[in-house]
Length: 394
Image (tube, rainbow, N blue to C red):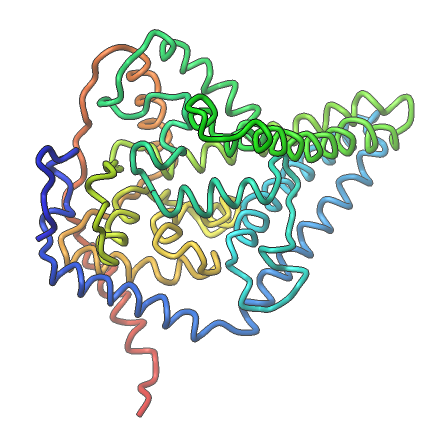
């Protein structure tokens, strides 16, 4: 059994119910699942991401073209809706996942984490550091993972309260609308700046990178494209672009917060992960994130981050494969008595908002966590049916 710290952060953490042998077995099973999928990647997967990029580019081109006539209300409405959808696809299913390296195996220089940039204010290099490295390495480790509360919110009742947190419900609304700008500033790491861990030159270089990327976004969405609509259409196209950006920002904020801050997720201390095994890392990813139930269209529009559990287990796996491996992940959870955190969007979003509202005030206590996952019998039957459909190899 993993060594229990003198004062465990959460004694209910299911990690402490597993022996070292069980963690070793679990780690090998999750590694094997990863290798199985990567050995199966091929043309079908490559077509998926190329078709998704083609769809997004056609949709955004058509929307921009329609907005040339934005002074007419029907054109404005169609263009704004189309642009909003295109920006969500570009941000969630394409940009986020390409820059995670999920499609690097294709060796396509045009669809690669080292070359891709996205339609948002955050510089690609800064985002990859704060998200791919810091967040996905130190998931939910207090003091290491800056995504826990984004350095501005109290999202754990054991965080010390201060009067500034009274404003976090208002700050949450502002962050939703301006989420791309919040993400752009996130890698600055204000705590590190205050403690003098970053040189003035480094901070200035990072600010210049944000300024260059932000200026490009502002010129594109709020000057150049509105100008193409002419004097009569300038303001209406400007409004369409602003609305599309806010829609994309709010949607991405909702999906990301629902995957990280519902009541079911666990947090950890640096002491607890100091000698973490491979199996322990998998368990931390699994119980530190939460899924959102929904339709195939919903999953695509969320960038498949509705499978946040699977994404944290395998951040380098193509997002289109998460729905395929989810039943296998649930089987492992049931076998080892681990929770599998999932729920409808309304439920997950409601718990997030309750946390932000409640913890803006002093006090508060940990919410009940889910017990071991129990797979419904119909799901077990469906998994068995699929297994029987796969031909046996000698």
